[in-house]
Each structure stands twice: as C-alpha cells, then as structure tokens.
Image 1: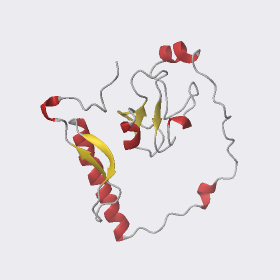
Image 2: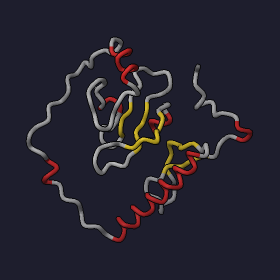
Image 3: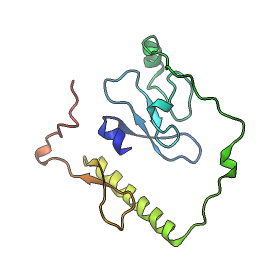
Image 4: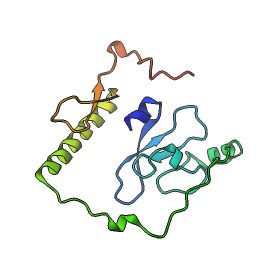
Length: 158
C-alpha cells in the first residue's frame, strides 16, 4: 500500500467487499481516468482489475463516469489468464500458530492502528521499514510539514 500511496494512489475509507478481506480499497491518482479502485490483497495491483467488468472489490466511481470514459479505454494487450479447475488452495495448510507468530501479528495490528491514526492526522507513510530488529515489516511514517505547507511530493500538478 505504501508504494502505491507514494505513487499518488489514495487509500480510501471503503474496505474490500470480498468475504474475510478487511483491506481498504486503493483509488487511482487524481486526474487519472477512468477512476479505478482495487484491493491490494485480492487484486495485487491495479493491473489485476478489469475496467468495466463487475467485481466485488474493484469498481469505477460511478456509472456515468464509467460510461463516459468507456470509449477512451484501450483493450489490454494480454488476454486474461484462464483459471484452472484444480485449486492449489485446498492443498495449502497453515503452519501451526506459535508464540512468535502471535507476537508478530499483535505487533502488526498495533502498528496498523497507530499508522492509520497518524495518516488521518496528515502524517505520511514512507517507503522505508523500521530498522529495529524487534519490528517485522513496520513502515516508517513522518509528521506533517511544519506550518502546514504541503510536501512537494504530494502536491498535485493541477
């Protein structure tokens, strides 16, 4: 998510509608048409979203926007990958939960909550992770610029 946010994508307050997926949807950068929403967990990235195709987790902002911009959408150069009937998910077995995995999950949950609170207050998530050996993939954040000035990396070109 952090990489997409650094590229101008916006984390929305809408969550993925896929069952058991609480991940917030990402929205395409301002000024990009058509406007695309995708789930980083279910789709992996915006290239995993088919514009105009119904999807539980991805959508365009409105029917009028979709219809108006549909004539400007070019077809993907690669056809969608066919899904096989054999599911490898059935063979996948989660490893047994350990004290370490519980601790990491709790740390991740706490970090996510704190980062979310700070993002709502204007903080920025960085592309770097915490260097502490006690942290497991926790992204660093920085406070808003003093005086309320906008970070030049986040100012739109409009």
